[in-house]
Length: 518
Image (tube, rainbow, N blue to C red):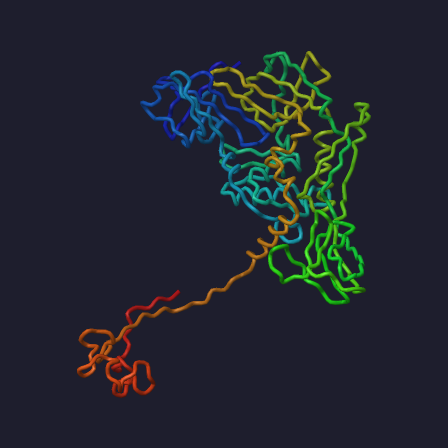
Protein backbone atom coordinates (compact mmCIF):
# COMPACT_ATOMS: atom_id res chain seq x y z
CA UNK A 1 0.00 0.00 0.00
CA UNK A 2 1.29 3.45 -0.93
CA UNK A 3 1.47 5.62 2.16
CA UNK A 4 2.97 8.86 0.98
CA UNK A 5 1.37 10.77 -1.91
CA UNK A 6 2.89 14.09 -2.93
CA UNK A 7 0.61 17.01 -3.93
CA UNK A 8 1.04 20.33 -5.71
CA UNK A 9 -1.53 23.13 -5.28
CA UNK A 10 -1.00 26.20 -7.47
CA UNK A 11 -3.27 29.17 -6.77
CA UNK A 12 -2.91 31.98 -9.31
CA UNK A 13 0.36 30.25 -10.40
CA UNK A 14 1.72 30.44 -6.81
CA UNK A 15 2.55 27.13 -5.08
CA UNK A 16 0.62 26.95 -1.80
CA UNK A 17 1.23 23.26 -1.11
CA UNK A 18 4.46 21.47 -0.43
CA UNK A 19 5.21 19.29 -3.47
CA UNK A 20 8.65 18.26 -2.19
CA UNK A 21 7.46 17.89 1.42
CA UNK A 22 10.38 19.98 2.59
CA UNK A 23 8.97 23.48 2.99
CA UNK A 24 5.88 25.36 4.14
CA UNK A 25 2.48 23.83 3.39
CA UNK A 26 -0.63 26.04 3.55
CA UNK A 27 -3.10 23.29 2.57
CA UNK A 28 -5.17 21.77 5.39
CA UNK A 29 -6.82 18.40 5.92
CA UNK A 30 -10.41 18.46 4.67
CA UNK A 31 -9.33 19.48 1.21
CA UNK A 32 -10.94 17.20 -1.37
CA UNK A 33 -11.50 16.84 -5.11
CA UNK A 34 -14.64 15.22 -6.53
CA UNK A 35 -14.76 13.77 -10.02
CA UNK A 36 -18.09 12.87 -11.60
CA UNK A 37 -19.51 12.13 -15.04
CA UNK A 38 -22.96 13.37 -14.03
CA UNK A 39 -22.00 16.73 -15.48
CA UNK A 40 -24.21 19.47 -14.10
CA UNK A 41 -21.20 21.76 -13.93
CA UNK A 42 -18.06 19.61 -14.09
CA UNK A 43 -15.78 18.41 -11.31
CA UNK A 44 -15.39 20.30 -8.05
CA UNK A 45 -12.70 20.92 -5.47
CA UNK A 46 -12.79 22.25 -1.92
CA UNK A 47 -9.40 23.58 -0.93
CA UNK A 48 -8.82 24.61 2.69
CA UNK A 49 -5.91 26.97 3.32
CA UNK A 50 -4.64 28.36 6.61
CA UNK A 51 -4.58 32.14 6.92
CA UNK A 52 -0.79 32.30 6.59
CA UNK A 53 -1.25 31.68 2.87
CA UNK A 54 -1.62 35.47 2.46
CA UNK A 55 2.14 35.76 2.89
CA UNK A 56 2.51 34.34 -0.64
CA UNK A 57 -0.89 34.97 -2.28
CA UNK A 58 -4.26 36.34 -1.19
CA UNK A 59 -7.13 34.03 -2.25
CA UNK A 60 -9.68 35.74 -4.51
CA UNK A 61 -12.69 34.83 -6.60
CA UNK A 62 -11.80 33.90 -10.17
CA UNK A 63 -8.23 32.78 -9.51
CA UNK A 64 -7.06 29.70 -11.39
CA UNK A 65 -6.24 26.65 -9.30
CA UNK A 66 -4.28 23.63 -10.54
CA UNK A 67 -3.87 20.48 -8.44
CA UNK A 68 -1.62 17.56 -9.29
CA UNK A 69 -0.24 14.58 -7.39
CA UNK A 70 1.91 11.48 -7.67
CA UNK A 71 3.79 8.80 -5.81
CA UNK A 72 7.34 9.83 -6.68
CA UNK A 73 6.57 13.35 -7.93
CA UNK A 74 3.77 15.80 -7.21
CA UNK A 75 3.40 16.53 -10.93
CA UNK A 76 2.79 12.99 -12.19
CA UNK A 77 -0.90 13.54 -12.86
CA UNK A 78 -3.23 16.52 -12.86
CA UNK A 79 -6.35 15.91 -10.80
CA UNK A 80 -7.98 19.34 -11.10
CA UNK A 81 -7.87 22.52 -13.19
CA UNK A 82 -10.43 25.20 -12.55
CA UNK A 83 -11.35 28.48 -10.93
CA UNK A 84 -12.22 29.68 -7.45
CA UNK A 85 -15.99 30.33 -7.46
CA UNK A 86 -16.65 31.00 -3.78
CA UNK A 87 -14.62 31.73 -0.65
CA UNK A 88 -15.81 31.08 2.89
CA UNK A 89 -14.03 31.71 6.18
CA UNK A 90 -14.13 29.06 8.88
CA UNK A 91 -12.15 30.13 11.93
CA UNK A 92 -8.70 30.95 10.68
CA UNK A 93 -9.13 29.00 7.43
CA UNK A 94 -9.90 30.00 3.87
CA UNK A 95 -12.34 27.51 2.28
CA UNK A 96 -12.06 27.77 -1.51
CA UNK A 97 -14.92 26.22 -3.47
CA UNK A 98 -13.75 25.57 -7.00
CA UNK A 99 -15.26 24.27 -10.24
CA UNK A 100 -13.41 23.02 -13.26
CA UNK A 101 -13.47 24.64 -16.69
CA UNK A 102 -16.58 22.78 -17.84
CA UNK A 103 -18.53 25.14 -15.58
CA UNK A 104 -17.83 27.99 -18.03
CA UNK A 105 -20.02 26.29 -20.63
CA UNK A 106 -22.95 26.36 -18.22
CA UNK A 107 -23.30 30.10 -18.74
CA UNK A 108 -22.76 30.31 -22.50
CA UNK A 109 -26.20 30.41 -24.14
CA UNK A 110 -26.72 29.84 -27.84
CA UNK A 111 -29.42 29.28 -30.45
CA UNK A 112 -28.78 26.86 -33.28
CA UNK A 113 -30.39 24.16 -35.37
CA UNK A 114 -28.53 21.12 -36.67
CA UNK A 115 -30.44 19.53 -39.55
CA UNK A 116 -29.42 16.11 -40.80
CA UNK A 117 -30.16 17.02 -44.41
CA UNK A 118 -28.68 20.53 -44.40
CA UNK A 119 -25.79 20.89 -41.99
CA UNK A 120 -22.32 19.40 -42.27
CA UNK A 121 -22.75 17.37 -39.06
CA UNK A 122 -25.29 15.26 -41.01
CA UNK A 123 -27.14 14.16 -37.86
CA UNK A 124 -24.03 12.65 -36.21
CA UNK A 125 -24.38 13.41 -32.51
CA UNK A 126 -20.66 13.39 -31.77
CA UNK A 127 -20.12 15.95 -34.56
CA UNK A 128 -22.88 18.15 -33.13
CA UNK A 129 -21.24 17.81 -29.70
CA UNK A 130 -17.92 18.90 -31.21
CA UNK A 131 -19.50 21.94 -32.84
CA UNK A 132 -21.21 23.01 -29.62
CA UNK A 133 -18.01 22.72 -27.59
CA UNK A 134 -15.60 24.28 -30.08
CA UNK A 135 -17.92 27.21 -30.80
CA UNK A 136 -17.86 27.72 -27.04
CA UNK A 137 -14.09 28.23 -27.18
CA UNK A 138 -12.81 24.79 -26.07
CA UNK A 139 -10.75 22.11 -27.81
CA UNK A 140 -12.18 18.61 -28.13
CA UNK A 141 -11.12 14.98 -28.31
CA UNK A 142 -14.26 13.18 -29.43
CA UNK A 143 -14.93 9.55 -30.35
CA UNK A 144 -17.11 9.35 -33.47
CA UNK A 145 -20.64 8.12 -32.78
CA UNK A 146 -20.94 7.10 -36.44
CA UNK A 147 -23.29 7.64 -39.35
CA UNK A 148 -24.08 4.08 -40.39
CA UNK A 149 -27.55 2.57 -40.34
CA UNK A 150 -26.87 0.96 -36.96
CA UNK A 151 -25.59 4.16 -35.33
CA UNK A 152 -27.75 6.55 -33.35
CA UNK A 153 -28.36 9.71 -35.36
CA UNK A 154 -30.79 12.58 -35.12
CA UNK A 155 -32.80 14.40 -37.80
CA UNK A 156 -32.95 17.74 -35.99
CA UNK A 157 -31.13 18.96 -32.90
CA UNK A 158 -32.22 22.36 -31.63
CA UNK A 159 -31.02 24.83 -29.02
CA UNK A 160 -33.21 27.80 -28.13
CA UNK A 161 -31.10 29.94 -25.81
CA UNK A 162 -30.01 26.83 -23.93
CA UNK A 163 -26.57 26.67 -22.38
CA UNK A 164 -23.86 24.76 -24.19
CA UNK A 165 -23.45 22.49 -21.16
CA UNK A 166 -27.19 21.74 -21.23
CA UNK A 167 -27.04 20.60 -24.87
CA UNK A 168 -23.87 18.60 -24.20
CA UNK A 169 -25.69 16.83 -21.38
CA UNK A 170 -28.60 16.07 -23.68
CA UNK A 171 -26.34 14.50 -26.30
CA UNK A 172 -24.47 12.44 -23.71
CA UNK A 173 -27.83 11.23 -22.38
CA UNK A 174 -29.05 10.25 -25.85
CA UNK A 175 -25.87 8.27 -26.54
CA UNK A 176 -25.43 7.18 -22.91
CA UNK A 177 -21.80 8.39 -23.11
CA UNK A 178 -19.45 10.32 -20.80
CA UNK A 179 -17.60 13.57 -21.29
CA UNK A 180 -15.10 15.30 -19.05
CA UNK A 181 -12.41 17.95 -19.02
CA UNK A 182 -9.06 16.25 -19.62
CA UNK A 183 -6.68 18.07 -17.27
CA UNK A 184 -3.54 16.62 -18.82
CA UNK A 185 -4.39 17.52 -22.43
CA UNK A 186 -6.61 20.53 -21.65
CA UNK A 187 -9.51 19.55 -23.87
CA UNK A 188 -12.98 18.09 -23.50
CA UNK A 189 -13.10 14.34 -24.05
CA UNK A 190 -16.35 12.66 -25.20
CA UNK A 191 -16.44 8.87 -25.26
CA UNK A 192 -18.67 5.84 -24.63
CA UNK A 193 -18.93 4.59 -21.07
CA UNK A 194 -16.32 1.92 -20.54
CA UNK A 195 -14.26 3.00 -23.56
CA UNK A 196 -11.18 2.39 -21.41
CA UNK A 197 -10.78 -0.74 -19.26
CA UNK A 198 -8.60 -0.32 -16.18
CA UNK A 199 -5.84 -2.89 -16.47
CA UNK A 200 -5.76 -4.06 -12.83
CA UNK A 201 -8.71 -5.95 -11.30
CA UNK A 202 -10.03 -4.51 -8.02
CA UNK A 203 -10.06 -7.26 -5.42
CA UNK A 204 -11.31 -7.12 -1.86
CA UNK A 205 -8.41 -7.57 0.57
CA UNK A 206 -5.84 -6.75 -2.09
CA UNK A 207 -6.50 -3.27 -3.42
CA UNK A 208 -9.99 -2.76 -1.97
CA UNK A 209 -9.73 -1.98 1.75
CA UNK A 210 -13.37 -1.91 2.87
CA UNK A 211 -16.21 -4.40 2.98
CA UNK A 212 -18.36 -3.75 -0.09
CA UNK A 213 -22.04 -3.06 0.42
CA UNK A 214 -24.03 -3.50 -2.76
CA UNK A 215 -27.15 -1.42 -3.31
CA UNK A 216 -29.91 -2.48 -5.72
CA UNK A 217 -33.21 -0.64 -6.21
CA UNK A 218 -36.24 -1.78 -8.20
CA UNK A 219 -38.15 1.45 -7.61
CA UNK A 220 -36.52 3.32 -10.48
CA UNK A 221 -36.91 0.50 -13.03
CA UNK A 222 -38.97 1.47 -16.09
CA UNK A 223 -39.33 -1.26 -18.69
CA UNK A 224 -42.22 0.16 -20.73
CA UNK A 225 -41.87 3.73 -21.99
CA UNK A 226 -43.89 6.09 -24.15
CA UNK A 227 -42.31 9.16 -25.75
CA UNK A 228 -44.58 12.05 -26.73
CA UNK A 229 -43.68 15.07 -28.80
CA UNK A 230 -43.26 13.79 -32.35
CA UNK A 231 -46.00 14.83 -34.76
CA UNK A 232 -46.97 14.97 -38.40
CA UNK A 233 -48.95 17.71 -40.18
CA UNK A 234 -52.28 16.90 -41.80
CA UNK A 235 -54.58 19.10 -43.89
CA UNK A 236 -58.23 19.72 -43.06
CA UNK A 237 -60.96 21.28 -45.21
CA UNK A 238 -64.09 22.61 -43.53
CA UNK A 239 -67.01 24.51 -45.10
CA UNK A 240 -69.47 26.97 -43.55
CA UNK A 241 -72.25 29.19 -44.95
CA UNK A 242 -72.63 32.84 -44.03
CA UNK A 243 -75.89 34.20 -42.62
CA UNK A 244 -75.06 37.90 -42.57
CA UNK A 245 -74.77 37.99 -38.77
CA UNK A 246 -72.41 35.25 -37.53
CA UNK A 247 -68.78 36.27 -37.24
CA UNK A 248 -67.35 33.42 -35.16
CA UNK A 249 -66.85 29.90 -36.59
CA UNK A 250 -65.21 26.78 -35.17
CA UNK A 251 -62.27 24.59 -36.13
CA UNK A 252 -62.57 20.87 -35.48
CA UNK A 253 -58.85 20.62 -34.71
CA UNK A 254 -56.22 23.08 -33.47
CA UNK A 255 -54.93 24.99 -36.52
CA UNK A 256 -51.27 25.50 -37.37
CA UNK A 257 -51.67 27.47 -40.61
CA UNK A 258 -54.82 28.56 -42.45
CA UNK A 259 -56.13 29.43 -45.90
CA UNK A 260 -59.64 30.89 -45.96
CA UNK A 261 -61.82 31.92 -48.91
CA UNK A 262 -65.32 33.40 -49.11
CA UNK A 263 -67.06 32.69 -52.42
CA UNK A 264 -63.63 31.96 -53.86
CA UNK A 265 -61.98 35.20 -52.68
CA UNK A 266 -58.92 34.70 -50.48
CA UNK A 267 -59.18 36.35 -47.07
CA UNK A 268 -56.35 37.77 -44.99
CA UNK A 269 -55.55 36.54 -41.47
CA UNK A 270 -54.52 39.10 -38.86
CA UNK A 271 -53.97 39.72 -35.16
CA UNK A 272 -56.44 41.25 -32.76
CA UNK A 273 -55.73 44.95 -32.11
CA UNK A 274 -52.79 44.95 -34.52
CA UNK A 275 -54.52 46.90 -37.32
CA UNK A 276 -57.73 46.77 -39.34
CA UNK A 277 -56.00 45.51 -42.48
CA UNK A 278 -57.22 41.93 -42.20
CA UNK A 279 -60.40 39.89 -42.61
CA UNK A 280 -60.29 37.37 -39.76
CA UNK A 281 -58.38 36.33 -36.62
CA UNK A 282 -57.71 32.96 -34.99
CA UNK A 283 -57.98 31.80 -31.39
CA UNK A 284 -55.99 28.56 -31.17
CA UNK A 285 -57.02 27.88 -27.58
CA UNK A 286 -60.73 28.12 -28.34
CA UNK A 287 -60.33 26.61 -31.82
CA UNK A 288 -62.26 29.46 -33.45
CA UNK A 289 -61.81 32.01 -36.24
CA UNK A 290 -63.56 35.39 -36.19
CA UNK A 291 -64.34 37.72 -39.11
CA UNK A 292 -64.27 41.50 -38.75
CA UNK A 293 -67.38 41.63 -40.91
CA UNK A 294 -69.91 38.80 -40.88
CA UNK A 295 -70.00 36.93 -44.20
CA UNK A 296 -73.14 37.76 -46.15
CA UNK A 297 -76.13 35.46 -46.41
CA UNK A 298 -75.40 32.26 -48.38
CA UNK A 299 -71.74 33.12 -48.97
CA UNK A 300 -69.62 29.95 -48.99
CA UNK A 301 -66.81 29.93 -46.42
CA UNK A 302 -64.05 27.39 -47.08
CA UNK A 303 -61.38 27.02 -44.38
CA UNK A 304 -58.33 24.99 -45.37
CA UNK A 305 -55.87 24.49 -42.52
CA UNK A 306 -53.09 22.24 -41.26
CA UNK A 307 -53.12 20.57 -37.86
CA UNK A 308 -50.68 18.46 -35.88
CA UNK A 309 -51.29 14.76 -35.52
CA UNK A 310 -49.45 13.38 -32.48
CA UNK A 311 -47.20 10.40 -33.15
CA UNK A 312 -46.27 8.92 -29.75
CA UNK A 313 -43.73 6.09 -29.71
CA UNK A 314 -43.99 3.20 -27.25
CA UNK A 315 -41.72 0.23 -26.57
CA UNK A 316 -41.02 -2.35 -23.87
CA UNK A 317 -38.00 -4.29 -22.70
CA UNK A 318 -39.35 -7.79 -22.24
CA UNK A 319 -36.12 -9.18 -20.79
CA UNK A 320 -36.41 -6.67 -17.94
CA UNK A 321 -40.07 -7.52 -17.41
CA UNK A 322 -39.20 -11.22 -17.23
CA UNK A 323 -36.16 -10.68 -15.00
CA UNK A 324 -38.06 -8.73 -12.34
CA UNK A 325 -41.52 -10.19 -12.90
CA UNK A 326 -43.18 -6.78 -13.22
CA UNK A 327 -44.04 -4.01 -15.66
CA UNK A 328 -43.27 -0.43 -14.65
CA UNK A 329 -44.22 2.29 -17.11
CA UNK A 330 -43.21 5.91 -17.74
CA UNK A 331 -44.25 8.64 -20.16
CA UNK A 332 -41.91 11.43 -21.24
CA UNK A 333 -42.81 14.47 -23.34
CA UNK A 334 -40.20 16.31 -25.42
CA UNK A 335 -41.36 19.27 -27.45
CA UNK A 336 -38.01 19.62 -29.16
CA UNK A 337 -38.66 16.29 -30.90
CA UNK A 338 -39.74 16.81 -34.50
CA UNK A 339 -39.69 13.37 -36.12
CA UNK A 340 -40.68 9.86 -35.14
CA UNK A 341 -37.09 8.74 -35.69
CA UNK A 342 -35.88 11.24 -33.08
CA UNK A 343 -38.54 10.05 -30.65
CA UNK A 344 -37.44 6.47 -31.24
CA UNK A 345 -33.83 7.45 -30.54
CA UNK A 346 -34.82 8.95 -27.17
CA UNK A 347 -36.93 5.89 -26.39
CA UNK A 348 -34.12 3.42 -27.04
CA UNK A 349 -31.74 5.31 -24.79
CA UNK A 350 -34.25 5.76 -21.97
CA UNK A 351 -35.06 2.06 -21.99
CA UNK A 352 -31.35 1.31 -21.90
CA UNK A 353 -30.96 3.56 -18.85
CA UNK A 354 -34.04 2.46 -16.95
CA UNK A 355 -34.65 -1.21 -17.79
CA UNK A 356 -32.32 -2.53 -15.08
CA UNK A 357 -32.36 -1.91 -11.36
CA UNK A 358 -29.39 0.30 -10.55
CA UNK A 359 -26.68 -1.52 -8.64
CA UNK A 360 -23.71 0.19 -7.05
CA UNK A 361 -21.09 0.04 -4.38
CA UNK A 362 -18.42 2.29 -2.92
CA UNK A 363 -14.86 1.17 -2.38
CA UNK A 364 -11.65 2.53 -0.88
CA UNK A 365 -8.64 1.77 -3.05
CA UNK A 366 -5.01 2.67 -3.58
CA UNK A 367 -5.32 2.28 -7.35
CA UNK A 368 -4.86 6.01 -7.88
CA UNK A 369 -5.00 5.92 -11.68
CA UNK A 370 -8.59 4.69 -11.88
CA UNK A 371 -10.58 7.35 -13.76
CA UNK A 372 -14.25 8.10 -13.82
CA UNK A 373 -15.74 6.47 -16.91
CA UNK A 374 -13.32 3.54 -16.82
CA UNK A 375 -14.58 -0.01 -16.90
CA UNK A 376 -13.21 -1.98 -13.92
CA UNK A 377 -13.33 -5.65 -13.02
CA UNK A 378 -14.53 -6.21 -9.44
CA UNK A 379 -13.87 -9.39 -7.49
CA UNK A 380 -15.76 -9.40 -4.20
CA UNK A 381 -14.99 -12.52 -2.19
CA UNK A 382 -17.96 -11.80 0.08
CA UNK A 383 -20.53 -11.46 -2.72
CA UNK A 384 -19.31 -13.50 -5.67
CA UNK A 385 -22.66 -13.14 -7.49
CA UNK A 386 -21.83 -9.46 -7.90
CA UNK A 387 -18.43 -10.10 -9.49
CA UNK A 388 -18.01 -8.60 -12.94
CA UNK A 389 -17.27 -5.44 -14.88
CA UNK A 390 -18.67 -2.09 -13.76
CA UNK A 391 -18.35 1.54 -14.76
CA UNK A 392 -16.71 4.04 -12.41
CA UNK A 393 -19.00 7.07 -12.14
CA UNK A 394 -17.58 9.07 -9.26
CA UNK A 395 -14.27 9.48 -7.45
CA UNK A 396 -13.34 11.43 -4.31
CA UNK A 397 -9.75 12.37 -3.54
CA UNK A 398 -9.29 13.33 0.11
CA UNK A 399 -6.07 15.23 0.66
CA UNK A 400 -3.98 13.49 3.32
CA UNK A 401 -5.73 10.14 2.87
CA UNK A 402 -3.88 7.11 1.61
CA UNK A 403 -6.96 5.89 -0.31
CA UNK A 404 -9.29 7.19 -2.99
CA UNK A 405 -13.02 6.60 -2.75
CA UNK A 406 -14.65 5.43 -5.98
CA UNK A 407 -18.24 4.50 -6.73
CA UNK A 408 -18.95 1.88 -9.37
CA UNK A 409 -22.02 0.31 -10.88
CA UNK A 410 -24.97 1.76 -12.70
CA UNK A 411 -26.16 5.22 -11.78
CA UNK A 412 -29.54 5.55 -10.12
CA UNK A 413 -31.91 7.84 -11.97
CA UNK A 414 -34.77 9.70 -10.38
CA UNK A 415 -37.40 9.19 -13.07
CA UNK A 416 -39.29 12.38 -12.23
CA UNK A 417 -36.22 14.61 -12.37
CA UNK A 418 -34.24 12.57 -14.90
CA UNK A 419 -34.01 15.42 -17.37
CA UNK A 420 -33.77 18.43 -15.09
CA UNK A 421 -30.01 18.47 -15.59
CA UNK A 422 -30.58 18.13 -19.32
CA UNK A 423 -33.35 20.67 -19.72
CA UNK A 424 -32.53 23.49 -17.30
CA UNK A 425 -35.78 23.07 -15.37
CA UNK A 426 -38.37 22.36 -18.05
CA UNK A 427 -36.98 24.88 -20.54
CA UNK A 428 -36.88 22.28 -23.27
CA UNK A 429 -40.29 20.91 -22.35
CA UNK A 430 -41.92 24.33 -22.44
CA UNK A 431 -40.43 25.71 -25.66
CA UNK A 432 -42.95 25.44 -28.46
CA UNK A 433 -42.68 24.83 -32.16
CA UNK A 434 -43.20 28.47 -33.09
CA UNK A 435 -39.98 29.25 -31.23
CA UNK A 436 -38.18 26.48 -33.09
CA UNK A 437 -39.37 27.93 -36.39
CA UNK A 438 -37.93 31.28 -35.38
CA UNK A 439 -34.55 29.65 -34.79
CA UNK A 440 -34.58 28.11 -38.24
CA UNK A 441 -35.55 31.39 -39.87
CA UNK A 442 -32.79 33.18 -37.99
CA UNK A 443 -30.16 30.70 -39.10
CA UNK A 444 -31.30 30.80 -42.71
CA UNK A 445 -31.19 34.58 -42.72
CA UNK A 446 -27.55 34.52 -41.62
CA UNK A 447 -26.56 31.98 -44.23
CA UNK A 448 -26.68 34.53 -47.09
CA UNK A 449 -23.48 35.65 -48.79
CA UNK A 450 -23.11 39.42 -48.87
CA UNK A 451 -20.92 41.33 -51.34
CA UNK A 452 -19.53 44.69 -50.24
CA UNK A 453 -18.83 47.36 -52.85
CA UNK A 454 -15.87 49.72 -52.54
CA UNK A 455 -16.67 53.40 -52.15
CA UNK A 456 -14.52 56.54 -52.29
CA UNK A 457 -14.98 59.45 -49.94
CA UNK A 458 -13.40 62.70 -51.18
CA UNK A 459 -13.18 65.93 -49.17
CA UNK A 460 -12.61 69.08 -51.25
CA UNK A 461 -12.47 72.86 -50.68
CA UNK A 462 -12.25 76.05 -52.74
CA UNK A 463 -11.97 79.78 -52.14
CA UNK A 464 -15.28 81.63 -52.36
CA UNK A 465 -14.48 84.73 -54.38
CA UNK A 466 -16.35 87.98 -54.02
CA UNK A 467 -19.14 88.41 -51.53
CA UNK A 468 -19.93 86.07 -48.68
CA UNK A 469 -23.58 86.04 -47.81
CA UNK A 470 -24.22 87.10 -44.22
CA UNK A 471 -20.67 88.34 -43.67
CA UNK A 472 -20.62 91.85 -42.05
CA UNK A 473 -18.02 93.16 -44.52
CA UNK A 474 -17.87 90.82 -47.50
CA UNK A 475 -21.63 90.53 -47.51
CA UNK A 476 -21.97 94.17 -48.74
CA UNK A 477 -23.07 94.73 -52.35
CA UNK A 478 -22.08 98.26 -53.23
CA UNK A 479 -23.31 100.24 -50.23
CA UNK A 480 -26.17 97.94 -49.34
CA UNK A 481 -26.28 94.44 -47.94
CA UNK A 482 -27.51 91.69 -50.20
CA UNK A 483 -31.24 91.67 -50.25
CA UNK A 484 -31.53 95.42 -49.61
CA UNK A 485 -31.16 96.19 -53.30
CA UNK A 486 -34.44 95.72 -55.09
CA UNK A 487 -32.54 94.68 -58.18
CA UNK A 488 -31.08 91.68 -56.30
CA UNK A 489 -33.18 88.66 -55.32
CA UNK A 490 -31.39 85.86 -53.47
CA UNK A 491 -31.95 82.52 -55.19
CA UNK A 492 -33.56 84.12 -58.27
CA UNK A 493 -32.44 82.56 -61.57
CA UNK A 494 -31.71 85.97 -63.08
CA UNK A 495 -31.50 88.55 -60.26
CA UNK A 496 -29.52 86.18 -58.04
CA UNK A 497 -26.45 86.36 -60.27
CA UNK A 498 -23.35 88.28 -59.36
CA UNK A 499 -21.84 89.28 -62.67
CA UNK A 500 -22.06 86.11 -64.71
CA UNK A 501 -21.67 83.67 -61.84
CA UNK A 502 -24.04 82.38 -59.22
CA UNK A 503 -23.87 84.29 -55.93
CA UNK A 504 -20.59 83.55 -54.15
CA UNK A 505 -19.14 81.52 -57.00
CA UNK A 506 -16.02 83.24 -58.14
CA UNK A 507 -15.05 80.38 -60.43
CA UNK A 508 -12.30 79.02 -58.16
CA UNK A 509 -11.44 75.34 -58.74
CA UNK A 510 -11.87 72.61 -56.13
CA UNK A 511 -8.76 71.35 -54.27
CA UNK A 512 -8.74 67.85 -52.76
CA UNK A 513 -8.04 67.78 -49.01
CA UNK A 514 -8.08 63.98 -48.52
CA UNK A 515 -9.54 60.81 -49.96
CA UNK A 516 -10.73 57.66 -48.15
CA UNK A 517 -11.37 54.35 -49.88
CA UNK A 518 -13.34 51.55 -48.19
